[in-house]
Length: 114
Image (cartoon, rainbow, N blue to C red; front, side, top):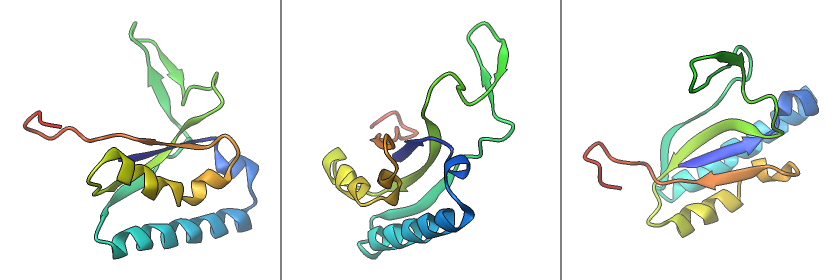
């Protein structure tokens, strides 16, 4: 899984720039798909009306307003290793934003095997 961490791009980019980024992202995903490595699942995460539930059961507006970066979305790729997934991540247009990162994580299977 590739997890996108970034600031809310809608607040720092024009609608035209967001459209360019979206097309670049679609092209990037198509290139992974052409290799048979894109799972087809993934999505952006909306910032509006988000909530954070804390260990003491208090609820605050989210996501994590006190930090600079948030989870912006994710995609699932079929990689043979974390290194291969990281190579896919290097091509993401999300990395055009200063300070943006992509976290590579393996999904746990239902049988508990990773």
